[in-house]
Amino acid sequence: MGRETPELPMASMADIAFMLLIFFLVATTMDMDSGLQRVLPPMPEDDQIEEDQQIRERNVFIVLVNARDQLMVEGENIPIELLRERAKEFIANPNDEPHLPEKEMKEVPYFGEVYATRTAIISLQNDRGTSYGMYIRVQNELAAAYRELRDDLAMEQFGRPFNALGESEQEAVREIYPMTISEAEPREVGGN
Image 1 (cartoon, rainbow, N blue to C red):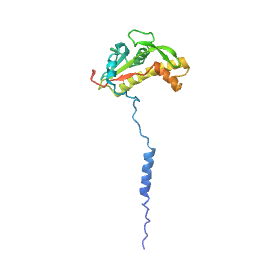
Image 2: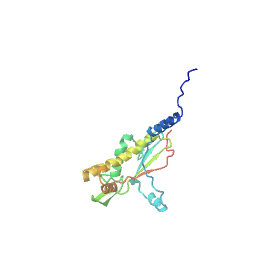
Image 3: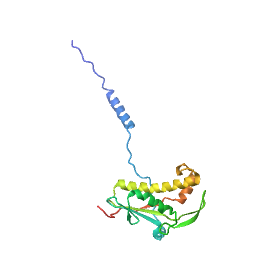
Image 4: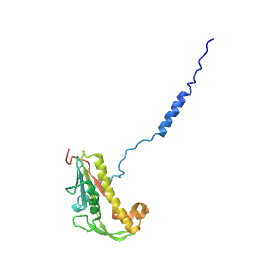
């Protein structure tokens, strides 16, 4: 009589493979694409379009990025390192310059009557060939300009940075420095 080889039970192998598959699906992390959190404005109504056309030139800060990732601000080529300071000067118009946005007296909670810019709009236009990295850098610099102005104002008025304020206090600061960035559809604005 010959010796029989013991059989390995293979019925549970499918169960083990299935459990390993589930484990790896649950334990694996997926990299999410990074991007900008922006809420797009609603489509303007007809009377809104007419009103927008009446905005004076001094109230619009024009930022152009071409296909070679070169930055032009208000008709002047500048390095991206200067964009934040130029945007802050435009948004705040600290000396009420005639070529910067108009200022008016406003009644703002926690601040009383303040002299603030009425309509400061940053208009961003990029070329279809603009790199995504440059687009993000420009967006970051513009957002940082607002963030720094809001932080400075919050520290001056409340002694705390903007993010540490309560909702009503943040709303008051936003009323003085509302973030108004208008993005036009990408087009061929120059360069290769």
